[in-house]
Structure formats: C-alpha cells, structure tokens
Image (tube, rainbow, N blue to C red; front, side, top):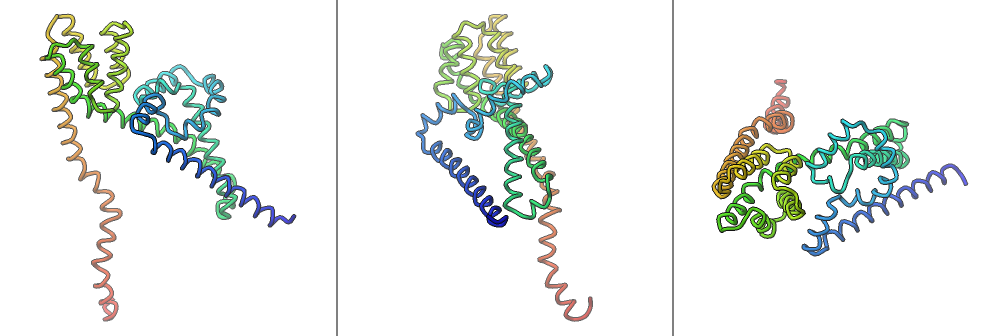
Length: 303
C-alpha cells in the first residue's frame, strides 16, 4: 500500500472518529434537552457537571491520585474555595479538578494533532500546533471554573433580596427561621440562592447550630452581603431581638445595593464600548462614507 493511500486512510479514520465524537456529544445534549423539566432539575441538583466532564470522569479519576500528590496545601485551599464559589465542591475535589485540567490538555493536544493530520498547513508547523492545543486544553477548565464562580456570585447577589423577602414574610407570619427557610426553598424559583438555602436548611435539620450553619454558608459564598446578613442574624439571636425587622432591613439594603450595581454597570458601558467602536465600527463607517468622495476625486484626477 502506497504512502498516499495510507495518508488518505488515516485522514478518513480521523474524520470518522471526529464525526462519531460530535454525534455522541449531540446525542447527549439532545437527551439532556428532551428530559422533563422536573427530572432535568433534579438531575442538575445531583450532578451539576457538564456532559463533557461526566464523559471524561473515568480518566479524571484515574489521574486523581497523581494530581493530589502534586498539589501544595495553599493551592488546594485556594482551589477548594473557588469550587465552593462555583457550587461544585460536592462534585469536584481540588485534585480531581487538576486531573481534569490534565485531561483537557491531553484532549487539546490530541485534537490539534488530528487537525494537523487533516489540514496540511497545520501539519507543516510541527509540534507547535499540538503544544498550543495542549496549553489551551490545560487552561480551559480553570477558566471555565473562574467564569462559573463569578457568574454564580452575580446570581446570588441578584436573587438574595427576593429570598430575603420570602423569609421575612414567613417570619412575620409567625414561623421560626427554620420553617421560613423551608418555605423559601419550597416556594422560591430555582437558582444558586435556593441551593445555598437548601444546604443551610439541611445543616439545621441535621442538628448543626444555627450560627455555625450560617457561618458555613457565608464561607461557601464569600460574599460581603451574605456575611453582613449572617452577622445581623447572629446579633439578633444574641440580643433576643425580633428577626422580622432585621430581615426586612437587610432585604432593603440588598435591593439598594443591587440598584447601585446596575447603575454603576450602566455608567461603565459607554467606556467599555469605546474600544470596539474605535477599532471596528468607526473604520467601517468612515470607509463607507468616504468611498464615494475618494472615488470621485480619483476620477477627476484630484488625487
């Protein structure tokens, strides 16, 4: 068999493998979308990991021990805090996340190598394309975790005033804090704030002291708003004050802070749009406006 036939066979093999992988990923996504709403929500609450993470989990578990041996205590604590902010601490350990980064690097290098086989221009680069693919695959899980943590914190700040209103109404109706939290979890819309309140309620039902459970929630979220709420509730418990006015004041303060954040983002929007306008929109606009003028001047011999 000639070298040309072998290269063509390799190209067809890589194309077949890529098509099979894309078809499997599309099938998993279609099954996830076709599941009923209630079943899908319960599945997400048990396993919030994306489908690709679940597909790579066997290899991740295989590399988890080696990843744990290469992590320093400081890095482990920092990564554990980031996982808690992202809401993935129950599903991923720091060592497992590092192993997932390694698997991403291997997958990125393999995909870049396959692309180099299929595209001659990439194949001429040599090992630069697989190396770049491995680096990108290695950094993608960490970047995705950072983005998920930031997005979840924004969602927590956005949902906190509404859930405080629910808890306030239940407390003012005569329920204690545990029953009010149960009502908020049962009646509130799905989201990260409901998940955090559900964890808080689970700790309270397990017999954990209320102050300790509240401090654990503040440590998981790492948000000043939640820390202030926990401090206010702890002070009210020590002084024997009524929780209703304190919760209502906290809800009003959180709502005011949310409005101020939205106002700040609205004021920052024109500044953030300045660079895209100067680099992309203004040149095209000027080209469209000046093209007839330049064409006329060229035709008349002025330019």
